[in-house]
Length: 185
Image (tube, rainbow, N blue to C red; front, side):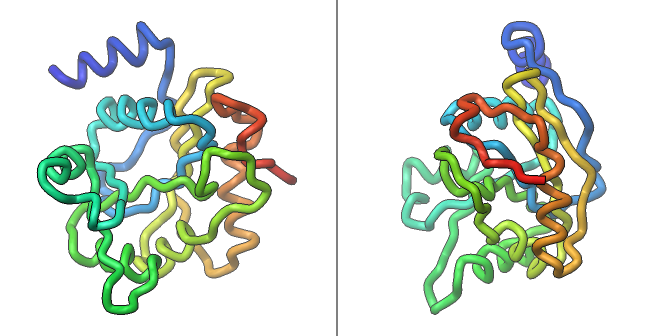
């Protein structure tokens, strides 16, 4: 029933579509979500997740996960990130993949809602360390489409791999186009 409500709002009222699909047989992956130019991206992602019907997650520092907000954050797919013990962020997040049977981590490699010319590399190295594919997902406000790309397994050639992954967002328009990642061929 909830899925029908999501579809009615997302497809009919908002006018969005979902292009592509996610393979439910891939229980662990890094979801590279771009462009991230507005707080409204969160809601586009929530609707898409509800319609796709697969568990998807995000991480936040463990201090955010205190009662009563921890119940809500976990329900929304949140996972507390413990960086104590000298672990860096990539290692700490990769450990979350080891601890769970299903973990699809949504992350924006832009790292901000402002214009950037370089991506943060953490999403890539998390996927490498956790030995999971990267699934590119584009939020195109110009065509009102959420585009789900094919799973991509990193090869350890960051430059070439990110060029391939970022090509998925070529021609995509963020909510605020001047704040999106500057795509370069």
